[in-house]
Image (tube, rainbow, N blue to C red; front, side, top):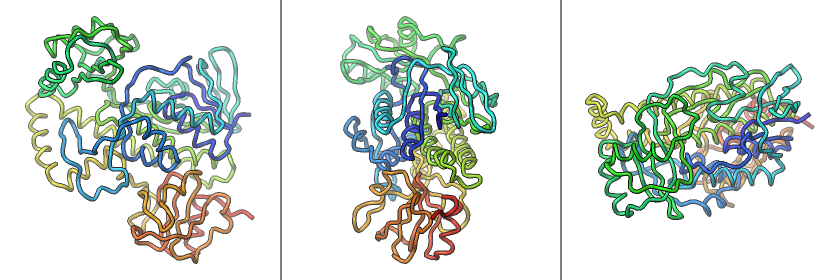
Length: 475
């Protein structure tokens, strides 16, 4: 029996596979597409995803293939400078195409021992108290202890589970692609800047290798959104909005996307779970979608590993839904708000002007940017110190830095007193005695996903929290 089958080999699925393999979980990734996609939907990683890569020792690989851009507060086309005192050691956006992100995460998963099989489509499933049977299009059946659907917004796994996906259908659509153009770069830049004064959803700019990335609002929502657009369709829309088609030709790929906004009612049904776009879809405003999926996987990986390993305390696996569903709902909420503010109607334009004024206040700008880059998330882990439930930034230690200690995906007790102990949990929690001028508590207990679940100096209190998050003591 396989420990975990992951349906979907995109960034969410491969990130999850890597997290599972860190704990020795036998994982099989099934991807229905025979070859990696050439479509570049996402263009970068936000702060929290950058931190995630750093926590797992992958950041240098990503930095080598991307470009760092200054972090600004960007909301519904309103751009403000980065506020002071942003709580991160990585105050930038990493520009990196989704195809590169997916390739690097796939390489990482394979290096760690994940089995990734392409051209394998899931068409059915059934589950019982002992495991899940996954039915493939070629007639094969696979038995696993758990199944995770990371198979996109049209998720087959979600549909087979019968999980409701409430929300709003697409009301607006865009055409997107990479292609060559005969117009000069100066013409493209000038026309794009003019059009974007009234249509923030329009864009045309160089994407490398002599290609241009073009996005343009469509005339309406296509009857069959699974059908790829034609070059003639895109050229027609360019003429409508820009007055020219820029002489675009030889597209590398074309696609359409909309602003459908939906969220799965449940992220877990028995031994089957959902993550990434299978659990939530929304307008691509703020570039949050891919990042949200990676962070879903980061939250789920260690919890599912604990369940497979037999040491998960009661409620640990259910905490995946409890913690990530509100985060997804908040992203849907802010993308809905941005969609409304991008309207050319007088009311939304007036609200947008007012918000632009408010964002001149540092606290407002910080609130907005921390929401978009996902560093303000606080899970409900109980009352106490202000750090509880929050991820801890990469603080400097006397002998290094925090994130260097988290590459193995284990829990961590950062002990500035030297008087505490992880006896009974040493197989799951690393005990590091070190100090930091940036940490104002005696010690913190940090989950494998970087969130603080205890702070203090009392050993008995620490033991109770170790049991809550890392199961019963051993040995």
